Image (tube, rainbow, N blue to C red; front, side):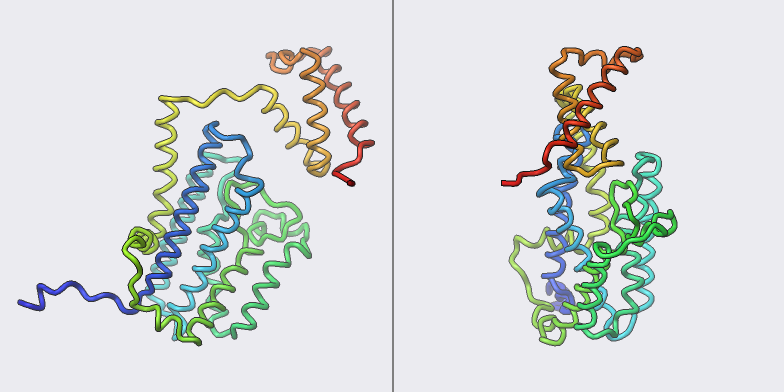
Amino acid sequence: MTELMQPPQKNKSRIEAIDAARGLALVAMAIYHFAWDLEFFGYATPGMTAEGGWRIFARSIASSFLFLVGFSLYLAHWRGVRWRPYWWRMAQVAGAAAAITLVTFFATPDAFIFFGILHQIAAASLIGLVFLRVPAVALVAAAALVIALPNLWRAEIFTAPLLSWIGLATTNPRSNDFVPLFPWFGAVLLGMAAAKFALATGWTERAAGKELSGWTRPLQFAGQHSLAVYLLHQPVLIGAIFLASLVAPPAPEAPLAGFERGCVAQCLDMQDAAFCEAYCGCVIAEIDQSGRTNELFASEADDTTSAWLGTIAAQCSMSTVHEPQGDDR
C-alpha cells in the first residue's frame, strides 16, 4: 500500500536537456511560422520571412532540428538498431510527411511541399543508419562535404522531378518548404558526431535522469511530443489569424507594390537580384511620376498603354545597364 502512494519513478534513461532543446526549437519554429502567416494574410510585408534576419532564423531552426535528429538517432541505436520502435517512428514521420504533401498540393499547387523538414527527417533517419559505426571525425568530414557540395558543384540532371530532392540542381524547385538532402543532411551527421563525443566523455550518463528547472517542463513536454506539436501548431496559428482578419482585416496593399514584385520575379529569370531591383525600381518610379498608374489595372490594356510600358522598360533597361551596381566607395 505504501508503494502505491509513492510518486512514479523518473525515467533515468531520458535526457531532459534534449527534450527541452527540442521544445525550444519548436517555439522558435512557431515564431517563424507566425511571421510567415502574418505575411500570407497581408499583415506583414510580402517576402519578409524569405530574406535578411528571418532567413537566417529559419535556417537556424531547421539546422537545430536536424542536429537533434542525428543526436537522438545515434543515442537510440548505437548499441544496435532497435527495429520495432525505429519502424514505428519512421511510419509516423513518413506518414505525416506524405499528409503534408497531399494537403499542400491542393492548398498551394504551385508551391506544394514535396520534400520539407519531415521528408528530410524521414530520409535522414534511414540514411543515417549507414553512418552509425562511422568514427566521429569521419562524420564531421562527411558533414562538411555534404554542406559544402551544393556551393561547389551542381548539375542540370538533378532538376528532374525525381532527383530534385537531392538538392544539387542548378535551380531549386518552387516550394513553401524545401529541405533537400544536400546540404541539410550535414546537420544530421554533425548531430551523430556530437552524440558519439557525448557518450565518449560521459556527458550522456551525467545528463540522464538529471532534472532541469521547473520552467522547462512545458518545453520538455513539447519536445517529447514534437511531431504532434509540429502538425498542430500551424492550423492553430492560421485559424487564429483568420479569425482576427474577420475583425480587423489587413490594410490593402498599394497597387504598385504588387506590380513591382511581379516585375522582380519575372526579371530574376534572366538577371541577378541587384539588376532586377534597380531596373524594377526605375520602372515603378517612371510609372508613378507619369500619373497613369490606373491604366495598369484596367480590365484590358490597349495598344497605347502597352507601347508606353514598352518604352519605359527599354529606357530603364538601358539606364540600369549603364549604371554601376553596388557601392564602390
